[in-house]
Image (cartoon, rainbow, N blue to C red; front, side, top):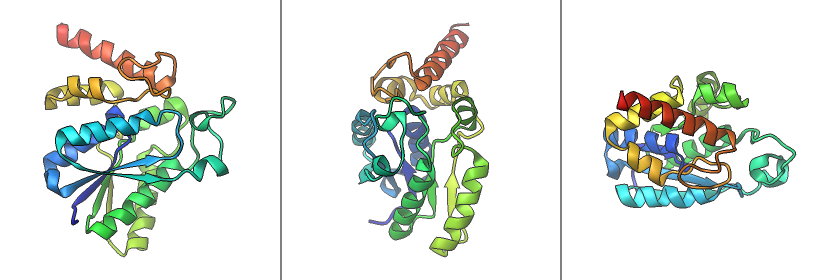
Length: 212
């Protein structure tokens, strides 16, 4: 199975938007959606990733990295006293996706990280600076000087990602089918976790702009 691009696809809005962008550039037959199961509390998002891939006719694969729960703590891994940061998660996913890309002949992986989110929630592995360092290491590991970690949303706000989804004609679909909530609740989510608050505030702001 030869591919040109791998999308790290959680089933959330941002990674699903990245999938849509990759499909527009490479075509559905040349893209693989790669989801990771690590015993996350919101694992229902993986089911949504599969639903989206079925709808868009994209190959989908799930990798299991349940060892994360044994070596670190996070609210997303069931520790209510910890933060929602899963230490090293994005770096680990990038490495595994890169290995998969290399095996399938792909030179690009997509990750839906947003630096603004990183600043608000302390996710230090969501910046372009972090991904540049990771990319440099992976180019050596893979002996592939043109390998890229693509982060098309990294400098956007959540409102801007929603506006891009609207321009692509997929906003309603993404709001309906994706799960960004840390509790795994679809639609408006739990309305309490940080991702729900950021997402819902951006949706309200965009809707007001569209109405105006």
